[in-house]
Length: 219
Image (cartoon, rainbow, N blue to C red; front, top):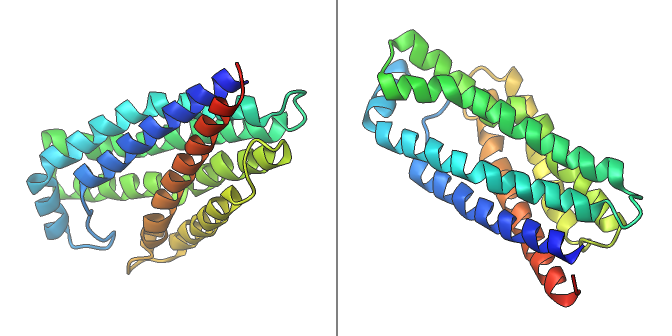
């Protein structure tokens, strides 16, 4: 399984680098309850950054899926003793990316072509929901089950669970954001500022573990 571990680890590191690049290029988006004047200014002034971040995100997805598939393969165990948990993590990852991209499409379209105020507001809300509250369950599913599987089969060290715990707590915070109609918690945005970096940190840590493991074991 060392080849699968190596491939997953390298892909995960590539995905992490691209994910961080997308966040840096995209910058800091406005608060979910910002005025429409601020949102309009943001979409027009940051049009290039929004489109570039979306393009980088698309480049990240193939690496992310290879990482998730490879991790599921090795975390399932030699005899498949943790296969349900491991492959559940892959399914969670696929769902996470699908919903995030679906939420992104209207907002990227509005930035690309321009739109009236009502469309900008609706597209921006949909984008935040796809990033935060409405992907919280998929985010949790993409990390927690496969982390448990990896620890069970001794593919991953126990300390990786710290990242999974922080992410799970942030995901719950994102869900709570659905009941807020104003302030930074609205739509789970504040918790999402913790959840996304926590997910990236988990992926980077797991990737390093997999690459190091592959170096220690023959193919």
